[in-house]
Length: 386
Image (tube, rainbow, N blue to C red; front, side, top):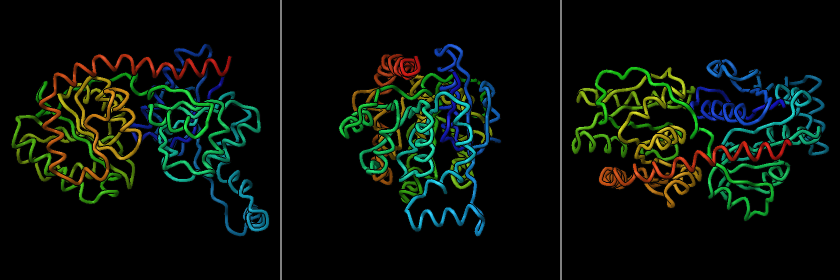
């Protein structure tokens, strides 16, 4: 059984790396004889993923102006409103492997939260045209993300695995019958514990992750997070470990966290983790923290999965849905509009600290069940292919 993972844009997003790593481990553990492959938009960044059977270049190809392909594409679009030829050329690096594989997993997690995705729609169409199995693996999708065109694409899938109940219920409400509930595979990912950096307080260090993506969507959030850092320094004796989790050009957590570090390093209680660690190494640090505050979903999953009380600077359905499945409600998740309010941030942090033991106990109860739900994804995959 040959399984191809696609819709992955490289492992400099350590959350994407975490999905591939953990999915590969789950599949290899549970699907007899499975061979796993990855087609990646940035394959050079995926060399850390050594347990895969192959990594291929899935970057988009351009259509050169005035070339034969350009003329054909233009004619088909102009006279027939048909973009399939053009999309086939653009996505050739992925489409060329369809004949060689048995199952295709679209693995982006929240890929379908960001507008129309015609390239992936075309890949999906061609996978099904060739009679191959097609799975949307561990997804989150909000009702506001669902256009008619996207719903038509979702109907093509043999199996849609929603990683939290908000997405699951939304898709069922839209009439989709190919949906099952699981949990994000990264809850099961291993960790690697590197030596602790200077300034780290054992059992008394808080991790803080912030992202340019959140800052762009709410410009005042940067000021509010700065106020939160000052509050933590003033009201506790915690060390703050600034923790990047996405280090892509133009979307680099390290750059924004370094600004905070430069401002607060004189306190002697703020440290900055390096920008060259892989997902299991970041998880190894997060697992040894006392609290975590994070914007990146897979950084918060690393915390949750180690029973670390966590406050989420959320910006989509995934953050709310994951928290709801763990706690029974959207506990300590602040929406994109709320995180510019320093008072709300500080009050939420204080609540997390005051309920530390209760939250930790609840995580210790819930996380084993969440991990079982991660494994359910592979059970459903096995049902599909046997």
